[in-house]
Image (cartoon, rainbow, N blue to C red):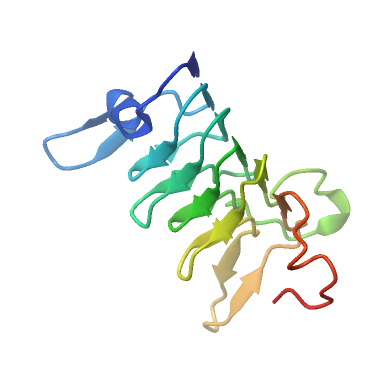
Length: 178
């Protein structure tokens, strides 16, 4: 699914490619790749988008994933989520899931199977990357419960999270950004 427009209503787009059955099960279509670019204004997501690769870009505005919003790119091998803004903030209050669901027992022959995903949040032109308390970014690997009740973690490699923003005099010389 590729959208390149002056303005985009992301929540309406999410509803347009999904259907809810009489039993309440929600099925999403276009689960391969979403590439949404808005030329002007903010992109706001309050619903769920499910696809293995998701890119949202706001050329002249910000991007907000509200507390009720979720981008789910999880799968056997973790997916990719990229949010880019110019002249606006990227604000995460909801969830970005790019975690792997396939459990790998032996790392020596895994290749890329079961590997965690990638999340990139980037802001240019004076914008900031903001992650609110309670927001979630998951690029981890699968876990499973053993017979004795303990949890075991996959031997696959975890994923990667990247934050990109212009340098700020406020944080440029700090050694601890936690």
